[in-house]
Image (tube, rainbow, N blue to C red; front, side):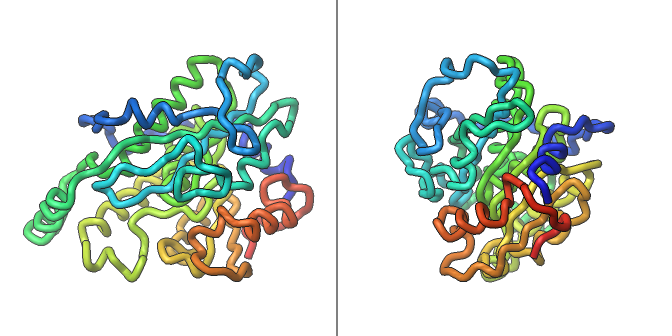
Length: 304
């Protein structure tokens, strides 16, 4: 696949506007959000923050909003302003994304913004309530309390803020839960988000089939998948590894239904903790050598 081919996907005008299938009504947990939001920042290729007033030509900027991974629903995600590139567990940029800083495509200069959502989901007791509801009624009433939905609300609000300030070309990127949120939102708001790049996207995935132990999360996962499947289109790139404890090419296979998505199975890479591999030099080398983001060589839509 050629680099320009991907950018054509990123910049192409969509004929159909995807309608959101879920309401984000409900209160967000803003306690502590202001403090964590101070860690939201533009970052250069070394992961060093810089002020937004340095970006003077927003119209000719391709803005990539990077979204970090996530911990347990009842915990606030750690997102350090000092997180170095590659320290993805602390909110650091995936090196492959950091390497795009200041590169140009179609006269657009790439800038990267690291977004810390700062929200928590519901406590363990509330999760148990939904488990009991599922057992008693065979279904769970639609809720918007879990962290993934709250994060998506924060992200799309930030996208709106950037659009209103003059940025016209916005791409979402993310690792793990941040990658899942990026794919979900791009599928539903293609008029606002030009594309998505997801590294090992995950939401309530296998990890020892924990959805069997916590069936309510299996239902939340189904709900998320249905939202994505109801979309008319999805544009972007998805990276996945067979040894990932949370999601694998098999569990994410439904994404292959979208012609606009490039699905990259990089299971050929050997290493420990596959879910964390996007933060490693090994993965970064793989992306560079195979031109996964800066496409320069032909290849089929799906790799692996």
